[in-house]
Image: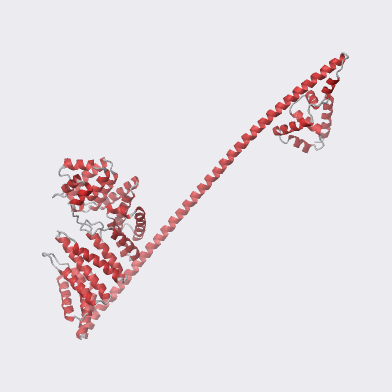
Length: 593
């Protein structure tokens, strides 16, 4: 195929359209198909109806319009108002559908390569923007194929694009692409793989395309091409039963199609002839010459037939004769073979040698048939002469085929290598992405752990501060109690001295005065609270001064609370001189430190 998306003839089934779109839409459709294709011939009704359609109905209606039947003037008249109304309604899907059909009719509209490319680029960008993956895939498909046909895209890159596209379509669901002629899209991809002789992938794409082709007049072109490619793959793989099965499908469809178009009938007749010849060829390959002859005769009659003065297709007749003549010779029908070979000479003469000039290798089989015919007649000199004519052509053909095969193998290997390289790059990107994501996850985890640790530290700090404050409060309370007891003791002592001066003494007051306020139990309680407020103070003092006595340790703790000498003496149940002596001993012990 030199181009894609050739317009096919569209026959309208008004009853079907009536069920699908309703009477108003059908009336627009009928107006559209009037002579001259005046889409909005009744502008008030046409534009209003199109404008008032719900978006979903407007989208279906756009795809139902037989644009291929319209001439360039009608297309221009139709597209202008439809684009305006869809844009006014912000109907993005219908706008994309209109862009698709405008691309399909680009030749009638005489769009330049630049305009065509901009149209597809805009369609793809808009579809991506609004998240319409079906339309995005369709636009991208035609864009890459247009680039390939313009030799702006190497076959290696197209190979990769096709692989990715098929995966996307499969993931989205092939059914979703019905409105955009999925069979034709897959045929483009399948025929590319076919030409590259990657028959496995070609067969995969074409068999999916076959599922979505309707054997009707509008789809006849794609239908026959898809089936013919599948048949050829099986034929090349020598899977003749499957090849014959698909040739029979083409034959049956071409026979059954009803049409009023003389041109379509002519094309169907040629396809019947081609399918019959292909069946004959595969039957002959299996040694079934009798049945093969019947199909070959029928195929030759069909391609040779002239209906209403139509110009005969010499190419089709020329190809049909190759199979028919070899079949006749296999069956020993020399005279019939001779007449047919004479017809070959007539065709060459009528065509002025253009047939063999365009593909002069086709004449090899006729030289070989001439050689075999003369050998059967016993004219060995003539047989050798034709054999000698065929041999250099056959050698040249073999070299060309080998070169082409080598070239296609190289192209396929290059495409596969390119695919592998892209896969490696993608895997590397995926690895980099994974490593980046892993690093982010680890960082987030570290931050989360740090945050948890920070909160725990804050909690512990607040808890310790609370405990410390509680210990301070307890220590202050104990100190206050000790001071109150000290004051009481001091008052008792003074009261006792007063009584002594008057010659009166109280034994009980003397006992209370000499009583130790800070008992061992009080000290243990006091020390526990003191160490919470001043942790390790007592331990450091003992580590620095190992010879400290318990009494000296108590004195140091009380001094830390800034108590007066009298208060300490009262609390310890001693007089002030004892405190002074204890301090003096402590200074002697610490003098060398």
